[in-house]
Length: 103
Image 1 (tube, rainbow, N blue to C red):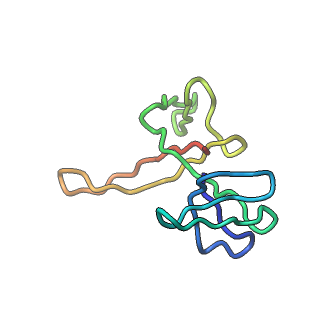
Image 2: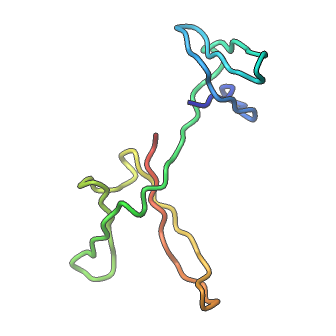
Image 3: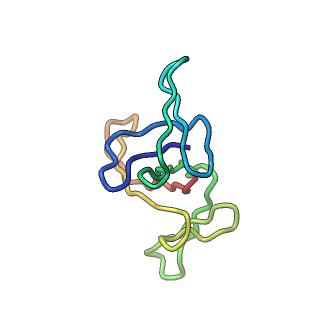
């Protein structure tokens, strides 16, 4: 897990250990800090699951939906779909979608 300061959140630290009141972060082999949970919060982390998704065309032939392990991907659950443009081997740009699941 990673944490950032509530509100500001520019510095992000990997949590080494966790107690009921503190996140313990390790900066070096000998340096540790205790960050109060009242001031720090977990960072939302996303994992690319695009390769595990099934694309389903809609009946109207103009829209598509994605399913990940049987679950319909939408903005109301732990998924996000991001449009992206990638350059193909032929030098042309192609539109695609990246599906990510919240950790």
